[in-house]
Length: 318
Image 1 (tube, rainbow, N blue to C red):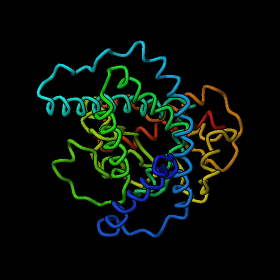
Image 2 (image 1 turned 180 degrees about the vertical axis):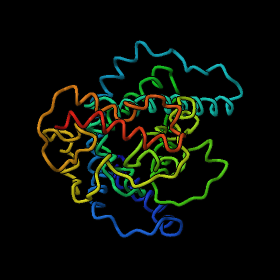
Image 3 (image 1 turned 90 degrees about the vertical axis):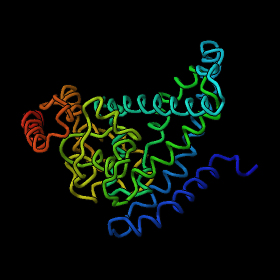
């Protein structure tokens, strides 16, 4: 059937996201002109998702065969009764595990050079809205999908609960990127809001707020920030023209010679090869010079850290 085709499903979800968030952004969002790179993000939402489905179809077919022998014989919560309570607990467990695994991957993506090269594509958006949530490199989506889903398969999470977790997280990802100027509310301490996630995309200063759904995870690991976000984008970039505005440019950016090696580099210019120690140092710009991560909520500490990081990096740039 037509609806079973991956491209049709990707287009359908993009259309539903547009219906849900585009009108809301007109009412409750910051006033912005249309982003010139919106066509590239539409391509990521459709063609990019088709590539993801093709890759995952082959990888998961192999993994399911390999995992079948080591997965639990019956679901972890199979003995819980009554059934509605078991379903609720399965969904809650799936969400928490999914988020903890995603948080760990996200932290690594800001530290490990090859992971940052892929993740930098997502951070290249210099304005956030519902459509910017789709700006993720297909290879990174494949990586994080495997990291977050394999443990749930091994624990025998029922298909219905697993599908519910995926649907909730996918919808919420669009929500936290949306251009919605929502006033602080009590529920935002429990569930991530656009205000919370936009702070993660802040162009300069400390990198905080890694969690996609539960802010308490960042509080648990000392990476929570409650301040409103400043300008967003790749660290150090000021010129919107320096970013790739085409689908091809976004797809090729991680593989361009030197692109994204420096967190302050722009994906449209080729950089001179630098020593490996610089790669490691700059991939850790969120912690070098201010490793006490409990100070994400520390106000002025971020500027002090930025100064220390810049001082350490200057000799390597010469």
